[in-house]
Amino acid sequence: QVQLVESGGGLVQAGDSLSLSCVASGRTFSRYGMGWFRQAPGKERDFVATINWSGSSTLYADSVKGRFTISRDNAKNTVYLQMNSLKSEDTAVYYCALAADSQVAVKTHHYDYWGQGIQVTVSS
Image (cartoon, rainbow, N blue to C red; front, side, top):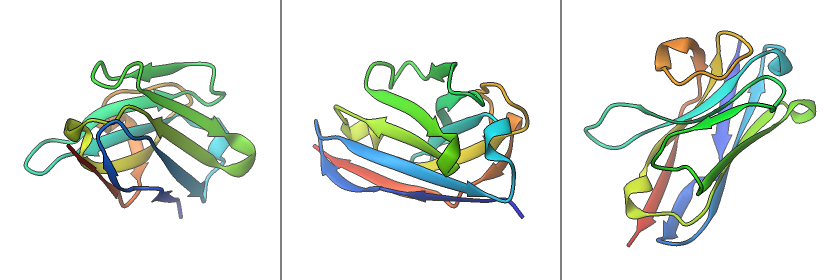
């Protein structure tokens, strides 16, 4: 049974930073790519960032490039999303996901498992 549990969300002001964590269990974490997605009310779930199995390859959505950083610690079965210079448009529920293979992936259908999501609210 694969389980992904996000933590670290909350309410911050524009310009602040926030760090999300996602702990995985039930699968050999180090073999799989991981991703972060977000969904604002009334909108589709959008890609944010992805990282391959080793951490050597990452991709970002244009909207977060230069502000967000994805990383992973395979010894802790954890993937992180460091979010800096937050904007009101970053407000959403953030989901971590475990990919179907070891590589980076930007489409939701490339992911087999999802966390329950965590709210990030940025006030302007």
